[in-house]
Length: 319
Image (cartoon, rainbow, N blue to C red; front, side, top):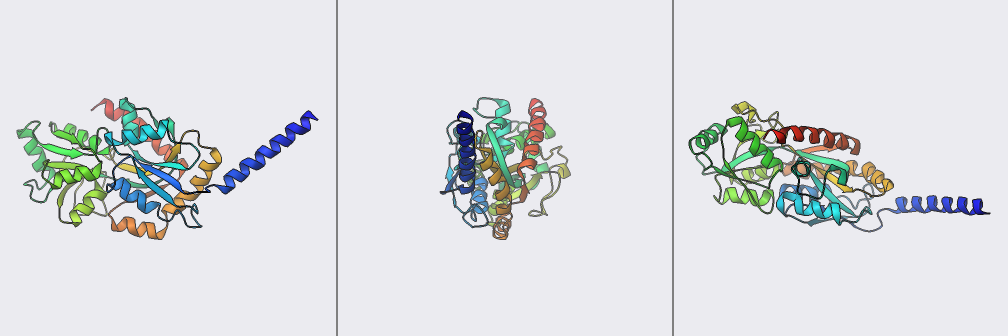
């Protein structure tokens, strides 16, 4: 009798688990963005999730919530320690940001705190100046920095985010010391500081810079990537201008869930989200906003996270 009861209990558990997975999601889903409204991550997150309610996607909408602060630390600390792991609270990830921050310490998360679902984009860092700046090239920036040690002020979205990593690489490659100023509010605030003349320049996302240039507000001097961007074919890479700067600061963005989320929900999201990113409406809006797409599956993201962690450990040890 005991065996029969045990068998029935197992069968019931399997049936219940299947029903839970099959019914997910039964209500709207939240997605946390660790940066302020209007910045590149927020802007893109709202685009790539806009078709979530479609029957060929999740069948339920995704609502964005912003928890900015400390270069993403506030949001990711909350997500790692307080967010429910039931599949109804997702988060946008930024690589190299949260991995670099976990390597440097002082945070409550690491790559092991999260489960990636899929990647939607890869956004290189660029160096920008206001349109009335005397700097016309990275050569001009370096020349000024060499003649005025520590006096060239430039903004970025925080410490040990892609912007900061690009800044450190530029300083090392040029053999100069500049004054990097992390701003509250992410890339949008960092760009406003450049446009307002609060700083002499800035390192920002290509997508933010593209929109600011289209509006006539900034000049883009260089791209921190291995090759020129299709969005900015007239802007040379840092390497083309004699600076040994690679693609370590390229900002990969995607969706993740907290560790402990049921595997059947992870699998369902991993099977659904890449196709949601590939929607033609999404692609059109991302292109119009100067936002490079780079769709990757869960397994591809897991490999990318591991590779970036190894690269960042070596890079940050030498900066």
